[in-house]
Length: 381
Image 1 (cartoon, one colour):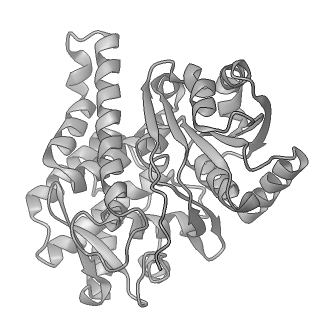
Image 2 (cartoon, helix red, strand yellow):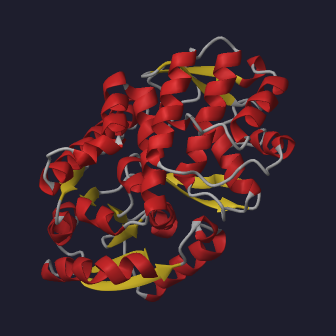
C-alpha cells in the first residue's frame, strides 16, 4: 500500500513595491473562508513596513493582528516561541488562517516554526526584509529555534505558501545587514556556479558604483542578482527538500551548509551577540577553504577568490580573541553530524562543492585552519 504525498510548490515574487501584492497573494493560496492574518515581525521592521502590509491584507478581506518579537538571534528561542503560540491562541487562529513573517531570518525561522507546530500546521507567507533572508532562509522551508545546546537544533520543515521579496526594503538596511547578506550570496555562488559567483563579486566591486549606470539600472541589476540567487536555492531544495542523509553528491542540499559548521560555533560561543549570521558564515567559509587546502581538495586560487569576495562584502567583526579549542568542541556538536560524524563541505573549485566525512578531517588540521583564519590580518590584502 502506498500513501501518495501531495507535492508542494509556491511562487516567489520579486520586485519594487512587491509588498503591495501581499494581500492578493495571501488570498490566492488560502481558502476563501480564511479571515485572520497575524503578522509576526520586530519593532524596527514593523515601524517601516507594517502599515503597508496591513493595508494590503485588509484590502483583501483579512482581519489583521500583529505580534512583535525582539530583534536578534537570541530571541529565536523557546521562550519567544511560546509567547508567539500563546498569541495565536488568544487570537483564535484557525487552520484556514495565515501567518505572515515580516522581517529577517530570525522572524522567518521562528514564525515558520510556530506555524508548523500550531494546530499541527497552518499556512504562512514569507516576506523577507533582509538580503540574507531574501536569498536564503525564506526559500526552502527550514524553520526552527536556537537553544542553549546549539543553533537550529530544534525545528521543522514547513514550506511557505508564498514568498514576497520587496527589494525596496533593502534600502533601509544597516550596512552590516547588507554585509551579512552578501556573505551568504558569496557562499551560494561558491557552491553554485562560477557565473553566479562572478556576478555576485562584480556587483560588489566599488568601481561598479562609479560607472554611468543610473540608480534605476543598478536596482534592476540587484533584483536580477537576487532572482538568480533564489533560483539556485530553489533548484537545490527541489532536488533534495529534506536534506537526505544518504546523499553525498554536489547537488545534495547539504552543500548549502558550506561555511556553516564553523559559523554556528562562532555564533554559539559569542551567545549570538557579536556576529550577524552571514558574518559568521563569512569566517566559516574561509575556515572550510583553509581545511580544504590542507587536504589537497581546495586549490589556492579558489581561496584567493573567496577572500577577495568576502573583503568586498564588508568588514567582519573581530574573531581573533576566540578560542580555537572551544570552537572545535562546539563544532563536534553541530546539527549536521551523521552517525556522530561531522559532514564538512569543501570547495573543489569555485562553483563545485564536495562533501567529506569528518572522520577524514584530522582535528589538528581544523585547529590550524581556525587559527589561520581568525588572526587579525587574514582578511587584509
